[in-house]
Amino acid sequence: MWIGAGFVALAAAFGGWMLKGRLRQAPVGPITITPFTTDGGGKSDPRLSPDGEKVAYEWTGPNDDNWDIYVKAVGPGTKPLRITEDPAYDEIPTWSPDGRQIAFVRESADDTAAIYTIPALGGQERKLVDVVGPVQAGYYFVPMLCWAPDGEWLVFGEKASEDAPARILRLSLATLEKRPLTSPPPDSAGDFQPQVSPDGRLLAFVRSGARGFGNQEVWIQPVTGGEARRLTSGQYAFARALSWTPDGAEIVFSYGAPGSLARLARVPLAGGAPQPIVGVGENTSDASVRGNRMVYVQNTTLGMDTWRLSHPGAARPSDTPEKLLARGVNASYSPDGRRLAFESSSGGDVNVWLSNADGSHPVQLTTSKSGSGTPRWSPDGRRLVFDSLEAGNWDLYVVGADGGTPRRLTQEPSEEGTGTWSRDGRWIYFHSDRSGRSEIWKVPPDGGTAVQVTRAGGFYAVESEDGLYLYYCKSSSSGIWRVPLSGGDKSEIVKGPVDWVNWAVTRQGLYYATRRSRVRREEFEVQHLDFRSGRTVSLYRREGAFFQLYLTVSPDEKWILFGEARLPQSELMLMENFR
Image (cartoon, rainbow, N blue to C red; front, side, top):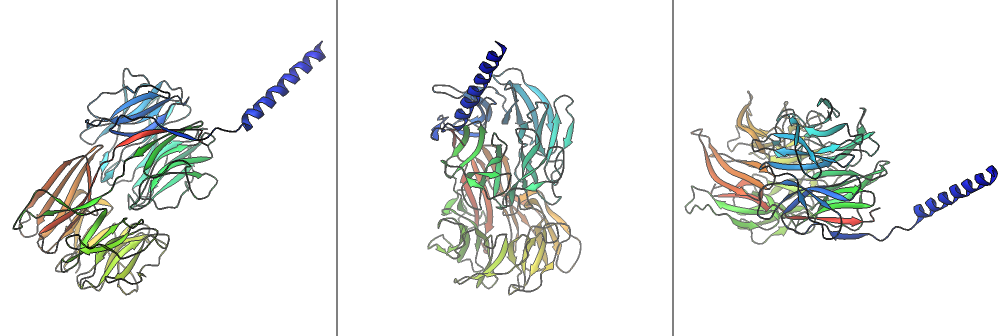
């Protein structure tokens, strides 16, 4: 009898093993992609619940400026449940491992933030900790959240001060004690977007170089500490929203090359180039994976155009800008004011283009496949310097204004870019991290030995019209400084963050634009510092669902140019049978 029972048990076990094997080897159904939301407005940062049956996300309606957290079940006919209703911005939801709670970030109007938890179906909120340091500092920064698999701690990014790089911290839910997990380079923008692996052993995050938007990569390191390892080398304009595959072997993330739309890709931990996600196209981002399901954001097309505003001191001042260049940005005027050089993706890849000053007769000047931009004219108007990824990293190139083959000016394996000319045409100023941090250097335009100019940080420099001073910013978004070229102490002319592409020096003064980012709203103000009087006046102010960058001024100071894009609308998409 015992022998018979043993055979029965063995047969049952064998049958179960065979069934399990057949299920494991059973063909997975075809990939299907269907809209998960269709109710307008903007959605961001969706996260599938641990069982894959619900999605938490942030949403602002078509006629609403606020972001709140919503939960929606997977399945036909389900409706979203709003679980936060505070007038502040509620963002970055993340599920507890048992699916009973959601942690999120609440961003206040004074650019501070705090981390909260709330029951997954709504209820009493609990504030955990304030996020130290500014939430807004130049390029938009929020402390992305991740709940660790053991349920005992959260990880998030935090900037200890305006000038410090962001780092990833671990927050104990029992004691609310914070402990740093990453140590970013001091001259970098820092570490963002943390995600812990399913087994809780590895931490994936995005590390951003000194350039901010323009040099971001995916990294991993052990949660317990140790050396960080870079997984990607695409020098992405941005990388964000990391999500581990269930087996912990790959990381799904969204990225954008310079001037391109967002895309989704997956990168293996074992090494290799990132591969696109099968079934999704461009303008997709913020994926979350659970089992064989993936939810992601489908954005509307975001294209930035250059607009022209007449100066208040012009003969016919206007407070209504007019569109000058479609899908063209980062423009600069020729010395005689008759032509524009700018970067555009109209030809497919981002390249340098030329046009008349009124935007007519645009002509493509460069044909790079990797991205080229930031064109700046020589004082005689015969040449342009620009930066490009054509050689695999950012370098400076010089090309004739009438065309020809661009000549590579910098050969270092470091990152060089944002070139501008001295007023006598003998030097080109640029930033380089060859010394270990971003500093201003200068090099003869025909080639030669580069000379370091700054010693305490530098990113973008412009020489004054009289050639007596050098104006520069220390990072991609910082104050504006001035130093005499004959020698002497530097002084801070404009305090507070100003994007490096949002200021211009003229004979009369310094023009600069400040941006204050709210998640679905921007405050953009153009100001002018008069060198003679020392007075600063506001020239133009705009507030709304727009994004502005790339300020420039015509040589006669009659026109102000800036790039503007409407913030995109977005919906969530659901992929079944992700693999």
